[in-house]
Image (cartoon, rainbow, N blue to C red; front, side):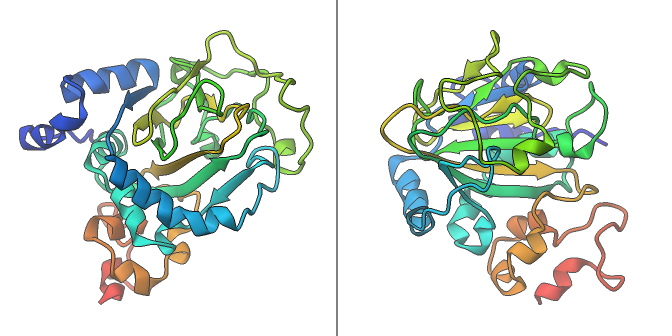
Length: 291
C-alpha cells in the first residue's frame, strides 16, 4: 500500500485545526501513541446542528442489545441514510488526511454511528476496531477510527478510554477484553465491577466539538457513565478499499440518497474503484449507477 502524503496546500488548509503543530508532528504522535486528539474543531453552532439531526433517533431510545453495544446506550447506525448533514463529519479533511495516509486514497467508510451513553452505563469490553480482520498482531492498522464529541467527554461521563502504545503490542489477552459472549448477553457486574481496569489506561477527555483519531489496532473501550447526563459522540470509521466494511454502506444508504451526496462521500460509500478494477459493476465504474 502506497502511503499518501499530503501536499503543502493541503497542510495549509488543515493548519487552523492543528493547534500550532505541523501535520507531521501530529502524525508522529499518532504513530507513537496510536491516537491523537484535536480539541475544538467544530464551532458551537456546528455541534448543535449535529445534535439536532440526531435528536429524533435519541428520543426513540432504542437501547443496546448486549454489553458490547451497551444496555444503557443508544446506538444510531446508517447515519448517511438518515441525514446528509453527517457527511460534514465523514468527509472532514483532517480525518481524511489520516485515513488516506494510513489506508490509501481508495479507503472506504467502514462504519458511521452515534453512541449515546446514558447515566448508569458500565464500561465496555476492551477491543480493537479492526480486530474482526483476524490478522495477527503486531501489524499495520487495517482501520482508522474517529471520535467526534457532540457532548464533552469528561472524567465521569464515560469518556472513551485508550491504552497509549497498545497498537504496537503483539498477541495479548487483556483482562476485560471482548469475546463472543459479550455480543449475546445483557448481563454485567454493574458500574463497580471492572475486570478490565488497566494501569496504563487514559481517558480521552475533550470538550464538545473535538476530534480524536485512532488506529484500528489501538486497544480502547467506552467508559462508565457515572454522571447524571448522557454523553454523545459520532464515530466514523474507515477501512482499506479492498476490505469489506463493517456496515454494508451500499444498502445502508439508498442510491437515491447517495446521488445527492458530495462526490467524496459517494466514493467512501463504495461508488469508487480500488485500482486497478476492484469494485466494478457490470464491468464499469460503480458511480455510473448514480447517473
